Length: 235
Image (cartoon, rainbow, N blue to C red):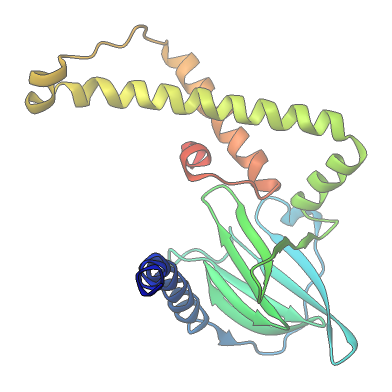
């Protein structure tokens, strides 16, 4: 019995360490949050489509409805190499932080992150770990994409499939381009030999596929879909 308890304790140790690391990481991110100045949330304008993301979360506080809004101006405020996100509560600026950011709210937190091509995360994570994506503002690019998915689910799925295929092709070409110079390193060449790419694409086709991969990554960003091994090719 004692041996079983010891074995169980050893198995539980990595889980405890992982939880502690996650908690420490969240505390460090929360420490970067600064209080807002109470300014009013600006309405979304059509000319802001390429460079602004706006999401909403409706919650309850003390039995009363409360709306949180996450505003990211990812083209206008990154002159210093960082992007800031603003959290609004009932239309007033509540907090500000650099991305990636985590804001504490009722019964959980709002986690926000983005890639070089757009948003990759804007979720409310409850205290028990359940994550739910915030609702995109109807006037934003993410809102337009969400309406397209709602009204034309079949076409939306095909667009998603094409985006994934474009990124997979981009990943494959990138691996081929990396493999050839790497295999020329003496240490590697002695063991596996020199790798020769089976084909060489013309410059115009290579550039076209790179643009297509970037477009696929941008389309997935509008749906907040992100996998580092896939979507990073478009960044």
